[in-house]
Image (cartoon, rainbow, N blue to C red; front, side):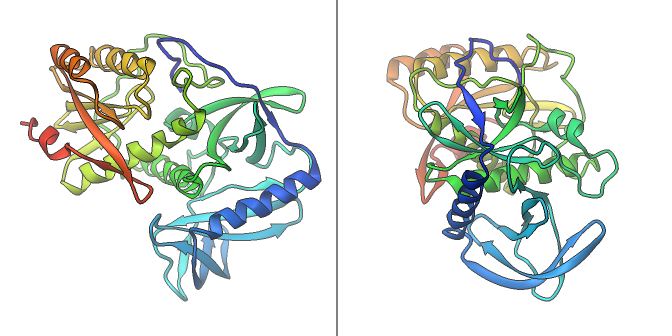
Length: 341
C-alpha cells in the first residue's frame, strides 16, 4: 500500500489467539456468509493436486461460491468465482483459512480485534493456486486493497484487511478480496488488466504496508467499501469496451494504445481530508503521464457548489455514486465518459 501523502491515523489491532474465541468467530464467519450464499450446488471442487465432491454455497448477487470443511489443523474455506457447474470440476480461486487454535503463521487467515472491540478478518497474503510465480511476494506487490498492521503474538505483522464483522457489506468485502486474488493471478498471464506501461519508478514516498489511511473523524467501517466501489466502477467500464488498469498509487485508469486517458480517485466519505487527498493524489499521480489525462474524483455525495467549482478550476471532474441494494450506483458516469476522445 502506498504511504499516504497527507498523514496517517493508526489503530491498535491484535490477532486473536484464544482457541474458543477462534472457533466461535469461525462459526459466525460461516453464518454471515450463509445469509448471502443461499444457493446450494452439488459439484466437484478442483485444486492443483486433485478434486473432491462437495455441495457448495453460491451467491448469485456476488457471483462467488464457497466450500468449507474442517482439516487437522485449520478451518478450511475455499472460494471460487462464477456459478458452479453441477457435476463438473470447478476451480478454486482463493482460500481464507483459520487455525484451530492459537497463532499459526503457516495458515493465512486470522481473526483480530481493534480498538473499540470491532472484529476483523485478516489475511497474511500467502496465496498459491498452481501457477508458477504466484506467491506471497507477487501477491503483495500487486494487491491494491487495504493493509493493516496487527500485533501478531510476539511481533507486528502486515495483513490484508478482508472484512469487518459488523459491516452490512461483510459478504461483499469477502467477495472483493477473492476477486482481488483472481485479478492478481490473471496478471501473471497478462490475461486481465495489466497496462502496457509501468509507472512504478515514479514514487513520491516509500511504501508502508503497516498502516492505513482513514478519513479524519469518520467511522473506519465506511472506508472498507473502497474496493467494492473501485471494482464496480471497473466492471462498468469494461462492460462498455474500455480497457482499465490500476496500480498501488492509482485506484483506476482507462488506457488505450499505451496512453492513459482518464484517471479515477475513489473516496468513501466527503470529509475535508477526503477531498484534499483526492485533489492531491490526482494531480501528483498524473504527473508521469506523457499526455494530459482527464482527472476524475469519485465521491458518495454531492459537493457544495463552491467546492465543485474549485475542483473544476483544477481540471478535475467529479463522479458521484450512491448505494442501492448494497451496490454503488454511479449517477453521472455517462456524462463523465462522454469526455473521452
